[in-house]
Amino acid sequence: MDVSSTDWSGIRGKIRGIHSAGNGKVLILADQLNLYDTVSGENITAPMEALEAIYCRCWAFDSGYAVAGFPSAPEDDGDTAPQLRVIFYDADLKKTSELDWSKLLDAGDEIMTQQALDFSSDGSRIVYATLSGLYLYDLPQQKRSMLLDPTAEDRASISRIAGVEQVGFTNGDKSVAFRATSLAVPAVPGQKSFDTTGMIHTDGSGFTNEKMSGYAAKKLIAYDSRLLIAEDFVTTTGRIMTIDSKSGERNIFNLSDSKEGGNIYGSDNGRYFASSLQAQDGWTVRVYDAETGMQLKEQFVSNDGREEYGYNDPIFCVLDETRACVVYMGRRQTGVPTKVEVISF
Image (cartoon, rainbow, N blue to C red; front, top):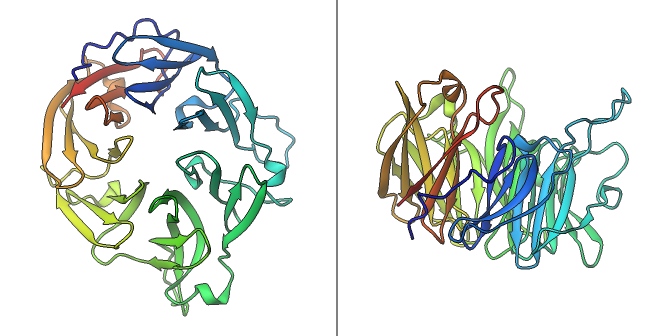
């Protein structure tokens, strides 16, 4: 389905974020919160909460949506860090509730990043990493359980986790994948912390945590049956790793250019992923099949002669249902509109 001619002109204000909302729809964060259908052009709006929109994360459920972000103008009391807000909406984008963190966090504990939070596919459970550990919270039952205590001795068989930075439900919501910063056990004098990836079942069993040999794992994208592991953008080698979350089988695919791999975004259901490579006058964008690693599309996106569009890597919102890759750039830069281009593949 070709949605490359999607009209974004009706979106009010500067676009700060575009996120998949399922079934060819996207959530657009601008002056308003928009639920936009890329096929029909129908748009539902709601007031935009006072959040740092460029860093927000969004989730889509059968019953509605969730948006997580830090306050754009947090109260400064000198002692307390800004608290992540998670806001729930129904299917018509009406605000229904906001997560009460007092039930999820102990005094003095906090979540450091939006990437350290994920919802199960039906929105009933939350997995989140804090300074003190990895937790699972059942919303209907209002029940919290600790999945991973970094200080526990029985978790030190491979490496001791210093902090969990990214999490995601996988394996039919039966497991949680994570990327962490870890330390060697036993300690090695002078050795710095290093990136590891691992998994743990939601009942607390099946814990793994390892430093990958010959692959600098830096970004975790978790799906129901597959994990995408992107390389560190500083040391990219033009590869991407996929892991079957049930069997553990791994594949490393070579991308079309050896400099690719540091800017990877997966599609909403994990069938595809997109990558970019900066060129003199813009960006080369490529879309791949996540099952085979085969390139499906290559398209050049111009910077329109504006250097501001090259200050940061472009962001992608890849939609399975309509086979569309929404590319946007300039969302952080004042004085230029956010450029949005849709690539059909």
